[in-house]
Amino acid sequence: MRNWSKNQPGSLLNWVKLGGLSKLDNSTLGAIMRRDLHGRRILITGASSGIGRCLAEQLAQLGAHVAMAARSKDKLGELEASLKSRNLDAFAVAADVTVEEDRRRLIEQTAQQFGGLDVLVNNAGVASWAHFAHSTESILRHIMEVNFFAPAELIRLAIPILVEGEQPAIVNVGSMCGRRGMPAWSEYSASKFALSGLSEALRAELARFDIDVLLVLPGLTRSEFSRHLLQSAGRLKIDFTAGMPPEQVAGHIVRVLQKNVTESVVGREARWMLRCQRFFPRLLDRLIARRVRKLYESTE
Ligand SMILES: NC(=O)c1ccc[n+]([C@@H]2O[C@H](COP(=O)([O-])OP(=O)(O)OC[C@H]3O[C@@H](n4cnc5c(N)ncnc54)[C@H](OP(=O)(O)O)[C@@H]3O)[C@@H](O)[C@H]2O)c1
Image (cartoon, rainbow, N blue to C red; front, side, top):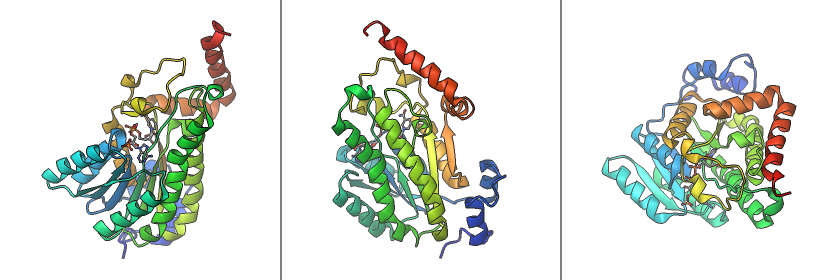
């Protein structure tokens, strides 16, 4: 039995989630909803580096049982050993989220190991930094597989187990590019927009099961992301070292889970960009297009 609705009946929660209290902002909702992460059974994809790795560390330190997935067996094994040496409960599963069999095994092994699942964090992601005209179909398809189809299918597999969980939630790690498409991140932006749309639709669909769907939209982060790019041919120089530390984004995700914040943007630059997008979308279109034209001026 869940204890989520101890203080508030499920029907009120559903009403709030579906917009009955639309005038309340996220911080107000946060004040009345609190998820205790101690003892929660949490699966994180993309836990071998960057944000996912930091998140696994932080959640394990809060007393959660953490299942960590990625392709890099060695890195996961090392993280698992490090957490276990501190008496924290962690469990590594080498899996490629684009492979159906791996996704099924990942959900089954996690549920078996912990006796269920309370939170699924879809964090694994890849990108390509290049202009669409010079990119390829296989890159587009790969990005959509990792960033959109994999989280979507993991959610489908996890729903029957989450329904039985305590304060169940799905956290989708999107991107600022999932609310404002950016040049040279075209395939990535498309994949993250798809994830944003899926999150919004499922939030209403899954409210009847009391499963919360939370969307986190980080800005530039100083992780291994730049080293994992499928290609890096964009003309603008992006300084990933100036991005937020992954620990900051992970800390934000922890708070999002504790306070049940449905959608949040991480990072000052990202917040500014999305504010401009909201109030001056046409102006932003023009400014960005002018910048891109300038970058190509000398060669075209
Ligand atoms: N860094 C940024 O500036 C930034 C900004 C906004 C949003 N984000 C989002 O934040 C999330 C985490 O990225 P990060 O910044 O922490 O980058 P990262 O350090 O490159 O981490 C990406 C993780 O995804 C895993 N992954 C990639 N392909 C996979 C696959 N096919 N199967 C399983 N795991 C796979 C990687 O592990 P393996 O290689 O071992 O499989 C790695 O653990 C991503 O969804 C990204 O889109 C990042």
